[in-house]
Amino acid sequence: MGDRELKLEDRGDYVAVGLEGDEITRCYVDYQFSLLFGDTGALVVIETPFSILGEDGEQRFDPEKWADLGPALECLLFKKVTAAKAHKEGELEITFAHGVALHVLPNAYYESWHVVSEAGVASKDGSMIVCMPSGKLAIWGVSQSEGDSA
Image 1: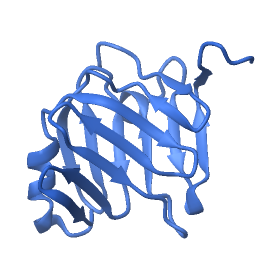
Image 2: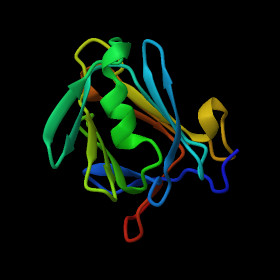
Image 3: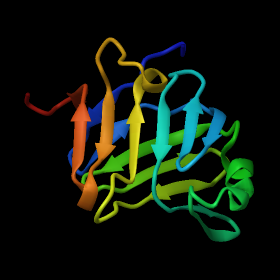
């Protein structure tokens, strides 16, 4: 699928999601808002309301309100990622080279987002991260950052 494998790295307060330099090549809209990344083949699935912060301020979106997602597509599609972090309290933050940041907060009752390597197919290392209800992260295939003892 992608040219490189998705890497998850534990950095203490957050897990680095290895999307740097990758770009969103496809978006899926149903009761979720899903973002497919071209190089890694990773899929980010957003299941609850999210926000995009840019020079025009904050815009809020709900994946279930399909007609309102056009501006989100315009902000994100074919844009390069500079950083992607899954914060230990459950927030997903993806920043882009053009100065926009995507934020998904945890939900008290539902899984709010998940990231899976190779668009839903387990990769060689099985990388996957899920924001469980109330923000707890379930993580598969994470490595320790250099300098951490294993």
